[in-house]
Image (cartoon, rainbow, N blue to C red; front, side):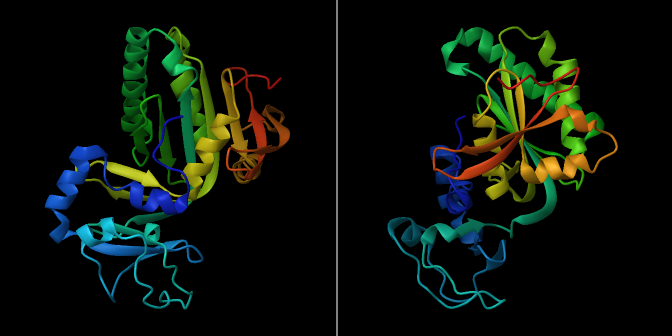
Length: 268
């Protein structure tokens, strides 16, 4: 899975510019940007009211100034990656589901076919969003997508997957998917092309959980599995506890496999 996220702190700063053009546009419009910093304990952003580093100075420094505590009294970090420059404060979305889909072995197959397949995939996601999930935040990742569903019901994420796979992916050749689902907090904001983007630890963990899958697996974190088991719309027998898995950063994730008659696969 190719993504510009590596951890929450990196996501905060790296989620803003999108490549060279995005950086150039950000530099041009830097006078209209506000500086926000992220408090890990609050899991929220606050507008900088003290020393504000000019954007060019910020890019050339290793550390930002330590200017005190957050409004709730938590000590400020001096790590510059806790800072983001945006026109407005990112929107915090709690009790939400994140769905990350990755096309397995995308780069190892015929590129023309894969380009057509990924185009169909993105069009399908946008169609489902406009027809049934209007509040969903969608972002393509090159070889898949990530979706944020501001809903306290993980069964909505399963319904999204069922409609996508049942109505579209089963008719596309060469696509083998793996999906990761997590539940918690994420942030959204408008990028410099006025497109909604999303980031946060829950987004990162959904990517990591998807990486544990292989051929058509749908894997859930413990938080999302616990939420799903409370739903009356999903059969409990569809969930299987796999146990602990460690991602490439050696972070442990308690993972569950989801398989129904229409989606998912047995985890061998």
